[in-house]
Image 1: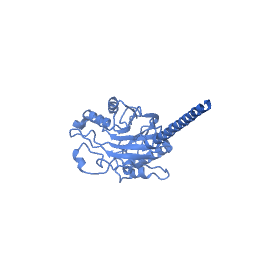
Image 2 (image 1 turned 120 degrees about the vertical axis):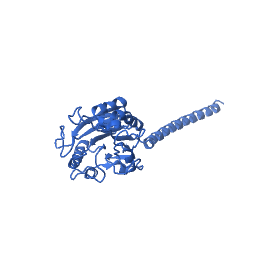
Image 3 (image 1 turned 135 degrees about the vertical axis):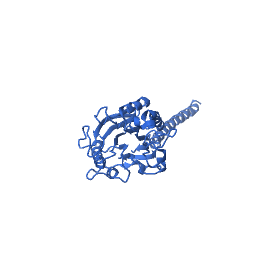
Image 4 (image 1 turned 90 degrees about the vertical axis):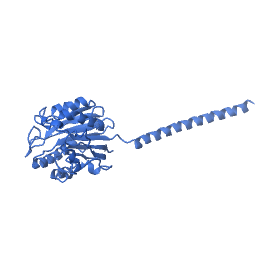
Length: 311
């Protein structure tokens, strides 16, 4: 009788061990599926970029002077919430006005006239908790790019501010350049574009690049051609993000409005752009024509793009 009663007990122990093994195998399989699913189905967060010529602070602009526009400008930036953006024509008081109102952002840049605080800034603002600033500098668009200087036939001193950033959400690194080409000198625009291409190639070491700015040139211009077709011998060129956006462009084609609502009825080419290079996909692109009670935040409309740094 003792032998007969032992057989079911051994059988139950064997079944229990088998169930434990199956349970462990199922747990391992579930974890493997979860890991693979996370790796393949959850996309990297997009990179929301903006370029915005905010128009310098001139009392002669009257109703369109900066004190009447700064809340509109910061409201617009806050609503569209770019992760990183470049501004043009910002004087020191405007740079600090944005800093006070956009507390989630840090910024880099110098005044173009003395390399410190005088003149317009081509500042780059970036989210403090999204990016680590790895390096930064400014150079001048002139024959002497390392010092404050007027280049070629330019009417004004022109500079380029750049930063090297690490995206703390993805671990990826990229460069952001921000500039404003001259409004008067054709030679200055072309030579400035050539110098910009040469400097970008030497600085970026084949990493992803974003270039924002007011280029005072439409897509038929020689300076636009230099940027998008490259310079002989340099082997470096950029792409207009509007042309490669996966979603159709949103908003007007033109980016300059001159504070005139009627301008929106006439379609002309843009002069403000977001260019990209090296493993960057463009998801969306827009010119933002928001107005407030019949007033524009600036005489330029910001350009906005959502980017993805490809694997």
